[in-house]
Figure 1 (cartoon, rainbow, N blue to C red):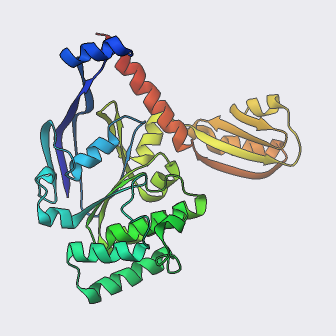
Figure 2 (figure 1 turned 180 degrees about the vertical axis):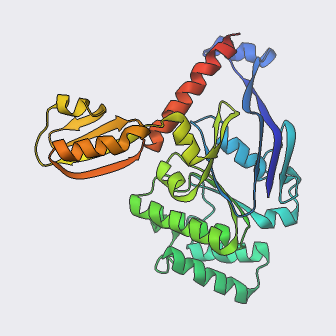
Figure 3 (figure 1 turned 30 degrees about the vertical axis):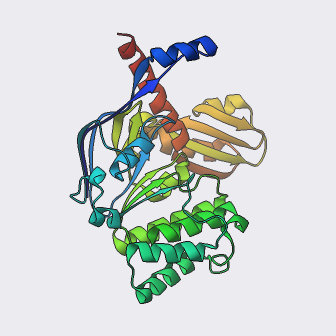
Length: 332
């Protein structure tokens, strides 16, 4: 469904020192520097897959999505989405994809979302009967029956985001590029959006490429993740493989009936966090069974949970390792 080979996107950025004299000099002699937003990345995504596209701010995630959606032309490399070259922006291609950005909106501010829905129906040439059926289905899934006729400016952020999804998906795109779709939403709204994306993917076989700094989005929706750092793809695999390669140790969370000295916990594993009635230990995966048995036999355990390290911590370690590797390369 998506094939990217050696995609590169560079920008020339004008830089100057602050001040009036520097501004005057820049009129006659402008200095530019090249920014490598995306630097020689390759990947393929099969039809119907849900893939997380992760990286720190400025890593090249949004630039890549814009290239895939046809908003930007690549500097070099080959990009195909459903067999189309995105930046040629053919009608058949535009009808089959959608880029949804959590920080952008297409809803008309002073009009109700229902008017935007009707406008999109006309743009995409959706038959009235089919439009009504699709709209009914998505309005019910996102639970926005009571808000679609209110002016957009009177809606909460979560209500606007849900209406944005309705507007974006009325033409039933089969490729979705989601750029921070839950940004700024409360936990209830985040769960609703994630549930809707999963349902849409499973019901219509849509391919989903998701960028998000919210690791709950990634964990709930994506088995496969790709990580980009300073424009380069540094990981492409499953979440399980990412955790196993980066932080293979397990986290054992203990809830205790009474306070336990830190020394009694340290003999079991590295103490990540310790409060009077709770503790989190980091232990090797091969030692988990023995540690659990010992904890239950020697400590006043009320509850015990074993899980992988938090994804936020896993990614922080990935980024730190990539940065440490990049700095010597940049210096040379």
